[in-house]
Length: 83
Image (tube, rainbow, N blue to C red; front, side):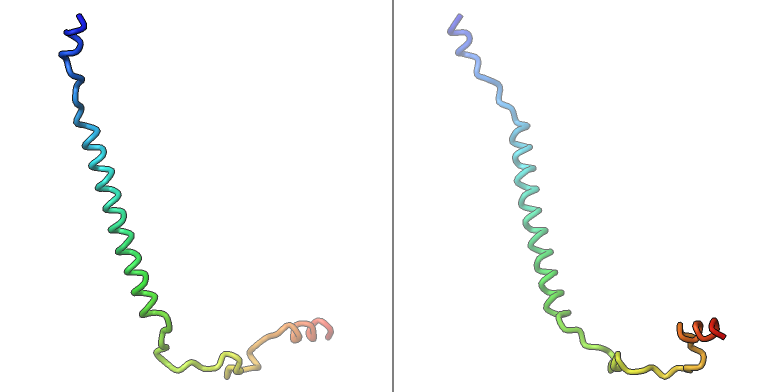
C-alpha cells in the first residue's frame, strides 16, 4: 500500500505559471509606462518653464482709460441716499 502512494507523483499545475507571467508582464509594463510619463513631464517643464508672452504686457497698476462718468461707485450711492 505504501508503494502505491509513492508511485503516483503529485499533479503539476500550469495555471500558477500563467499568473506569475501575467504579474511580471504587468510590472514591466507599469515601469515602462511610468518612465514614459516622467520623460514627458520633464520635457514639458523644460520647454514651458518661462513662457514668452506674445505681446508686450501693460502694467497692471496703471489706471485704465475708461469713461469715468459711467462708472458707479459706492460713494455715488451714499450721496444719492443722503440727498
